[in-house]
Length: 490
Picture: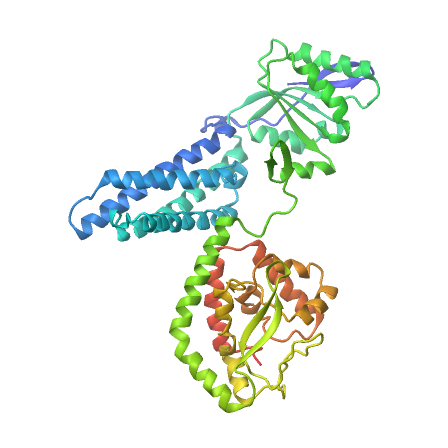
């Protein structure tokens, strides 16, 4: 391989050595790096069709003794596959870099898969065609299909990691045009080799930005070296500060019938890692992503309503008994209302069974502490068992809260904590929850020190960044355990 090095007004060609794969490695499978995404899509389609038909046939053989309508099952599989693959592709889940991230794959495909089935269930109910599909076969397909999709991603992770390690991706000869600092970077050259890119020519960009003749000679040298060769692609990497000169160089390279790809470096290169979209003819860059996608919010909202509704029906007798007991125990209202901050700082009135002799909701509020004399006799037991929090199920039904999320603090405490804890306001990127990740990790109740609130905020932000349905169910399960233990509940 050759390396063109700048030397005054001319360029000399020197050898460029890249690590080569061993003879054993060269006998392994090879695939184009760019073919990974299409192959992954085809694999998903095959898996979805296979699991749908197998689930339908197995369920029908078990219940009615026949295979059932395979054509109908195939049509349903086609709809599910089209929705799932298109949604996943739109979020770049088939990119090799994403397929290598198992945690991200699990977290992102699960809500999409569940959302598709919820959506199709709603469509079937609206169009009154639910009788066409077997509920048992559909549920079996939903569970087995998700398990199979997760399983194939484990396989992809192993295959891609191995392929990158031993350079199994098929080679493609390129010409590399880069700044001197990058040209000498072995890590970058190693990355090119691992992804199947073989720099047959390597050109170092001129250091002078004002010498127009030098740049013109540089372009002519590149064209002369590449024209008539077996180079398949040109990759250019440089700081965007050189864009005027690079743009002129690109115009000179148009005489070559080859694709030219640009790899930005420097501070502004981070912008190219962010998602982009268009508003008319204008390109916009997503500098900060919303907390969740529309589909993820819809799934979480549906589950919130279902769980809160079921809990209200089951626990209504307990709530009525509690209301009567509060009225008999001490004077005052049954329900305590206090202003809290919700999603995006929206104020709402949180509902709790009254457990104290005071109803504080001003600019200064004293948190309840151990052996607090303001807590009523019944209130101690209600706080110990968290029964006082049950009215917040109505806050969940009204959309002000969620089953799981950062616990909301009084407005007075929000103002106080925001002054002493960095990124405290980021908690408002999600709806506040009846329970939360911080609470099940021991940070429940009074925050006596700055370190306590800092740790609580850190746990809340981790939950927001790593949210998944599985995590929500885990927190709900851990909450039951915490209620039994009763730590920091006073």
